[in-house]
Amino acid sequence: MSKQIHVGPVAVGGGAPVSIQSMCNTPTQDVRATVDQILALEKAGCQIIRVAVPDMDAARAISAIKAEIHIPLVADIHFDYRLALECAARGIDKIRINPGNIGSHDRVRAVADACRERGIPIRIGVNGGSLEKDLLAKYGGVTAEALVESAMGHVHLLEDCGFDHICISVKCSRVAVNMAAYQMLHEQTQYPLHLGVTEAGNPAMGELKSAIGIGGLLCLGIGDTLRVSLTADPVEEIYAAKRILTAAGIRQTGPNLISCPTCGRTKYDMIPIAREVERRLQNCTKPITVAVMGCVVNGPGEASAADVGIAGGVGEGLVFSKGKILYKVPQERLVDALMEEIDKL
Ligand code: SF4
Image (cartoon, rainbow, N blue to C red):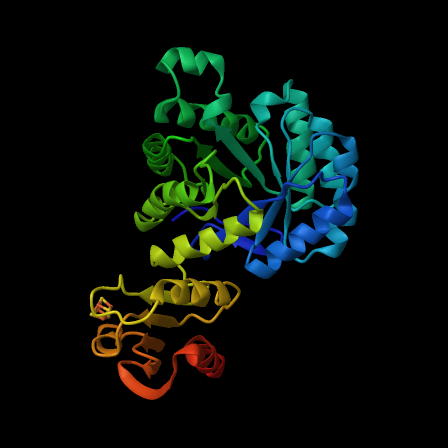
């Protein structure tokens, strides 16, 4: 089992539930826009949120943002150790920084000391796109071995400063390399692992890559927290993360929607209805199974595992629970009736 760290009040690793993260795409110094985005992400189910801190204006915004949000805040810092010190002083909950990129040992020690004093963990975030040149030359490109060697090099720099409140990510846009790297890291270290497939792309393909790359590792018992990276509104990342956790059977963060593929027995326009049910359930947190089925003859039986479900017919449909029919409703009332039954659960 991995070592446990705490990001604010959220436990990561050591058997804690896998937590969902995202990253704002607002300018961090625009406190209003950033807070509004974080509040929307909280509502969707985000548990840890990261902001870019490219300069001192962004670092100085940390305390004002923290004052208005309810989930732990992470500062993403690339090269300037002074930004890390400023964020630490302003109450940040975690810092993502690679100590090998910030210069002298004194700077690394200054960051490690500031974080240790305040109980702030550090994420080492290695990315395939920014691997050290010597490792690229040694391994002939971005490989799992190169990602892991880079990450462990940064880890050792922090450990040399007596700092071990660490989590690690080794992200790459090639899913197979990504997965191999995390598997190697899992063998080599007890630190909790932050999973992600970087530059995963637009929502459809990005979620698919993440489902394989993140969900596959979670099914192997690897990974403690995750971010799905999508070229989209960050709220979409949270919905995708919840779907991946549910699909992998790791943590049901809301309803598990099951629906049949439709077939020649389907007598109503079911596909838009299934989509509408999915849309209405996006913010529901009940760990239930909901079914949308294509026919009244086989639907209730095929979805007998569902806590509640609907099956459409000609002009009217059925609402059912655990395979038993509850009542009939006119077709146009089907989705509303389903929602009413879910409200009662
Ligand atoms: S539930 Fe009915 S419509 Fe859906 S796949 Fe089964 S038989 Fe076909």
